[in-house]
Length: 271
Image 1 (cartoon, rainbow, N blue to C red):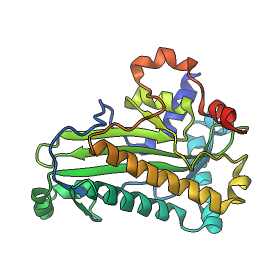
Image 2 (cartoon, rainbow, N blue to C red):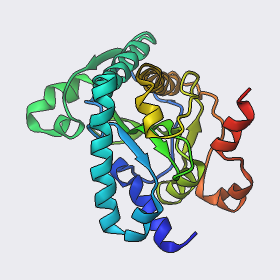
Image 3 (tube, helix red, strand yellow):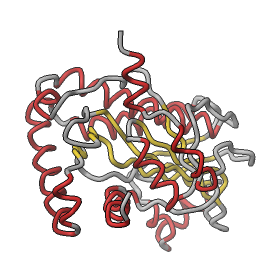
Image 4 (cartoon, helix red, strand yellow):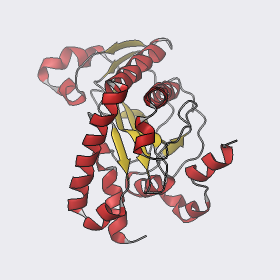
């Protein structure tokens, strides 16, 4: 894979803004009170097909890619409704319910993560043992190329942070539905990434028209991702590492070429 292609593929995930570092996917600290910061997202559904023409165009291609994603979002929500906001609400509500059910005192407001550290929010900081920051990105449908299916997808990064020391008590980074080549490259830049399979999201669409022609099914697939992602984060905060399909780490990169692709596994699972 050429250096330019690597650069562009990494840029596809640049909006995630994930911090590189070791993950702590199982909470081992005593925490009683959790503030859930406003969940950070892209603001739209990311319905993207990797276009080789855009790849060779560099930054100009990235601009065109962004314009096309915005138009795809508008066309999809005209058919399926306000799916992006439904997914964000489902993620937030499921997360708060699951964590609260574990015995934590939970407050899920609309305060942005960095706003917790303003002088005006000192009361909230003093009240909470930890602040949960979630970046729920790349939610939508991803196609690796002009001949590849559109797959429901998402990229999630969660951190539980002690507000006074900024110590990271728990962190996890995982994907759903993104092609393995993208995940491998992102792992080189970001660190360990944990791909997950989500029941209910194991559908594929031949092209964008196929996505638009199945508004109810595709909407339910994205809502399944939102709910499953929230439950996965909650399981880590329960002190239990949830089962995953595989883990991509930079130091394992020399062995990754032998791993099966998600597309291959989906084909094998088809009746």
